[in-house]
Image: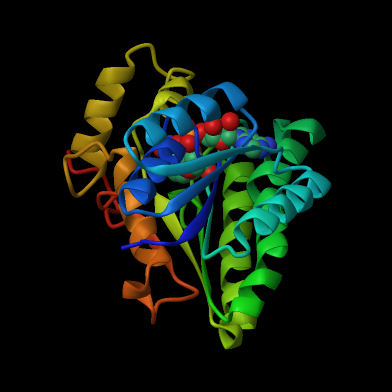
Length: 260
Ligand SMILES: NC(=O)c1ccc[n+]([C@@H]2O[C@H](COP(=O)([O-])OP(=O)(O)OC[C@H]3O[C@@H](n4cnc5c(N)ncnc54)[C@H](O)[C@@H]3O)[C@@H](O)[C@H]2O)c1
């Protein structure tokens, strides 16, 4: 679906969604440019993708730092001359009663999840305007739509990402740029398991009960599935879809009560 496309993926070396995104997009024949803070993970994944004949490059960058984002995108444009797609996936979570959240915690989540997404969009959009085409996919969360206790600040950041998505879609549609968001549900991965371990001793049981009782589909979503949804949104097959926020949540948002 993405042959000859140059696509940036932030947080693309993560052990969860980032990883699944990079693999799926590379297997759809995109050249995947991974923007990461974790250089070791990034180099490992780039090597793995190249060994399978896929096209991948790594760029070390902290997306919370606007100057680093600008210089990284400048280097990418110097080398590749264009960027066809951008996936903003790098993000961190926070489980904390909102009134107990410190300024430091609040600023960390806002600067990575929301500002980082904004900074990347701001850096790539001028080149997409010149090309008269481009597709941006922002990884939000089900917490952009509904939330629960302890997730207020994370929900605020992801709601911001969704508002930004709509605002960019409205402003740059005339330039041929599409902007959409994906709301993943509970997705398997090391970061998810670390977060779940904060409130239960039995992580596998929690994951089993959650998928069984709280979702329409009794299925633990795999990171690769978020990559497949992103590949569709990045490709011309979704040419009339913009400003949308699409849940990939096995039906979690559909249920108003647990099944059992
Ligand atoms: N895992 C889930 O169940 C889930 C559910 C809903 C939404 N999400 C969202 O999906 C995205 C990926 O989450 P994940 O849990 O799969 O994590 P992940 O395993 O993909 O890891 C995130 C990656 O982001 C990178 N990163 C963090 N801060 C960075 C920074 N400042 N600059 C550059 N890179 C940085 C990390 O090094 C890591 O590789 C996040 O935006 C998260 O909010 C995840």
